[in-house]
Length: 236
Ligand SMILES: Nc1nc2c(c(=O)[nH]1)N[C@H]1C(S)=C(S)[C@@H](COP(=O)(O)O)O[C@H]1N2
Ligand SMILES: [Mo]
Image (cartoon, rainbow, N blue to C red; front, side, top):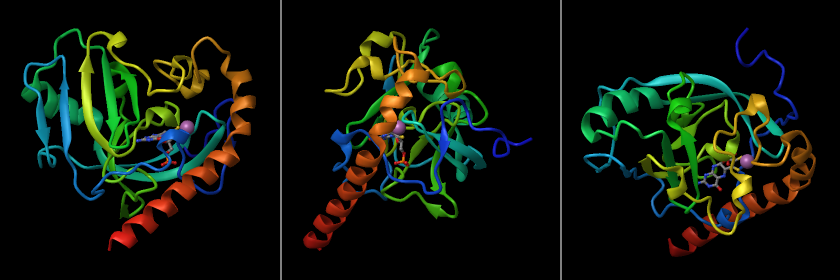
């Protein structure tokens, strides 16, 4: 049975469309040049580096996976491609940047200022991608151009869009979920199967509250994109 045939995870409901979504503060923020990739690899490692593209030795990978937002909506069978995070880590980061042995955490930062943290061990799973394509198209502005994280076993808020930096950390306390959002919203692992929606609050209850925010958030995200496109057209 492939992932697309399975039941949805607990508390999730299927959506037919795949809306642009995210925290309100970032609804109007975009990369200056969504087509240009620059990725800084830093944190507790011997050689920080900034790259503008990927080593041809890292194989491309395509996968079909479901996407689950913490607010209770899911989209089935998205067709992503890019490269496996594990390949990037083992073939590029480990030999070239040499993270400290005891780095257990990785922070992903988007060009809009959004960020999230994941456990390195979770990131090495087979289905975690640095994706640059959705369907047969390069990622659009709505879904994270030019590069985003895809970690289907973790809630959408771990799937950082518009990636500009990846930081390896020994100590999770050096990271903070973006202001002004409360820390409790960011579960360190956020595994969908276990409803790790947030810290301290039971996920099965929280989703009823979160679900109320969906229509407004979808509308705000869509308006943010329209405003951005209007601004860039004015500039010519
Ligand atoms: N850079 C960035 N990445 C982000 C967000 C954001 O606001 N900015 N929102 C997160 C949330 S809460 C979700 S559900 C997904 C939504 O991805 P989509 O816009 O491709 O649907 O992006 C995640 N990654
Ligand atoms: Mo989300």
